[in-house]
Length: 271
Image (cartoon, rainbow, N blue to C red; front, side, top):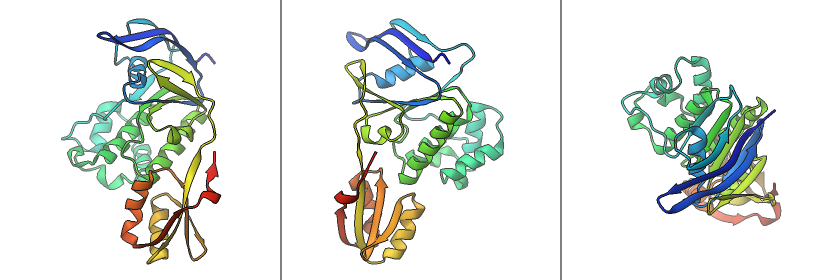
């Protein structure tokens, strides 16, 4: 199937060239990720594909009949509407069963009936992902989608976009966090100075932490509920495939009174 094609794309903001004569093809039935520092041009590229920004020259060729949906930067919502009403405003009439299924997966069910003005940043991000998925578009664009998401929500997002891939969709993700999006992607590109270079996808390592806590059982149950892979080991617990940063992880386990904590180098998982 003909994919999404970008030919000789150039974009400038005043005198700064953000995208430099860019040419690349993205195939359907795949997850493509673009990693790079803020300001490298990755968000601008997604905006141009979505029709939210004008290009200076070049082409974005989307196969006839294919539709595009995008979650770019911080999601915009009507703060006076609840979650359900915002979905209706942006997507139209949708199957409430499907909405509830996605909300439950993201632990957002109880908040769907309250005003979005009361949502945290993470809750807004979850709702933005749900809205984007419910469009049922053929091309799904996500700019920094895991921003403010916890471990469980990141795992849910990965499962959902993998299912979209199986349905033949093209998913393009941009992020500054190479280690995370590498776990999602069929193809990975580095973005630097307005140019995309295909990354050879060197293996990365997901952290595993060994802990002893005042109450290992309660900690283990809580960590499992958050989406962590937890196993009993050597009188403590081994927490595997940790996507969040070490600092964020320590913030999660701090209330359980840490007696011992170490990175389990010999048992990290290579992907």
